[in-house]
Image (cartoon, rainbow, N blue to C red; front, side, top):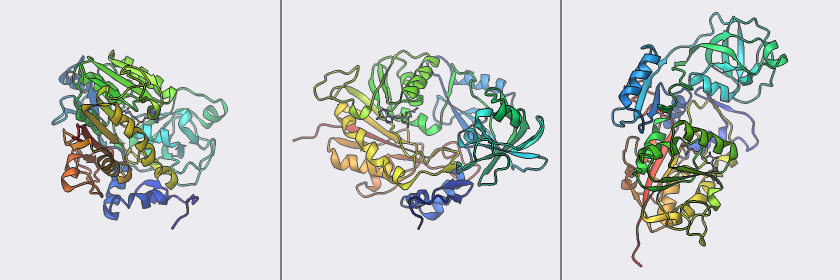
Length: 439
Ligand SMILES: C[S@@+](CC[C@H](N)C(=O)[O-])C[C@H]1O[C@@H](n2cnc3c(N)ncnc32)[C@H](O)[C@@H]1O
């Protein structure tokens, strides 16, 4: 078995994982299921989901606007059961290096953006030979972070994700340090998706389906007083405010300043007024002495509903091109996630709702947290995470067969024609209610 310091990365269906990551995931899935999931995760979903800014726009209008903008090149439809979701169907294509005169190596962040429809900008380029602008190049992601900036002929492990036309030369990028403008204009991807960044920003928000479902599960109502403990970049916060008709209050907490800035930008773009943002550590926001429901420190039993969407190992993110998380990093998440739970429960009113969600796969960060909540807090009961659009959870000690039907897991399928509810990122949602327990 590989050691903790082992730097060898194991290639698994187009994604490069540290062997420990795969071993860890095998505690949750059979080998066969894990292959299916990792295969699906290595490419982006064929279907892109968009949440309509339902406060100010009709889904049918957004669909018409998108159809016009995309010139009929992609199918744009409404989600079969969620009225505020629009689905755009991309196309899968076989990618060959034929006629490419050289390889451009990009970093992981850039690779993910390309697979989501973006072109390449110079900060994302790590390696590039001497080539003339205008020639056809293939684009490869440095999944193991081994390519040094400016390398001419990198030979390490990469994943071929796209082809395109070189717009900036090696001299422009590494000598003149041109920072703006397109470096490679993408012409072919293994999945062809529309580039929607900056498009119809006041009408819609690009969001993965399970994240949209999580806010519906919370079931926000006008006038509610809601806490979002880990809010940036604000996909769920802004959706919650929209579902409340922008009436009531959402207290949105975030620990990291630049993420607070991003959250505030997203709130502004969606023109929402009921959200109050605070930069703070949610694991320390509760105080026995406080009676405040409107600003930190926050008191007990002050919220109708709480969303806890804590940091996680993010192994459900898609495309998952490379992952070199160490075992010690992955296995630290459940205890960090647990740090938020007890205070969340204290701040929740009796009769209130707590939704717990993650975008990751291991049972340790999902069902096992649910089982621990149920065994530690008799006042918390598990209720059905409606609308149930995903699949049942995984059976772990402390959960019954009935319990696993109340939570939902989104597990990407390798079936290229799987429907919108399974062509997703990996995600988990559980919903609890706080009840008075007789003494
Ligand atoms: C999974 S992301 C949240 C995504 C968000 N709910 C959304 O839908 O856009 C977790 C967030 O929690 C923040 N975070 C991490 N530790 C925190 C803490 N102790 N208190 C508050 N926020 C924290 C991270 O910076 C990150 O932005």
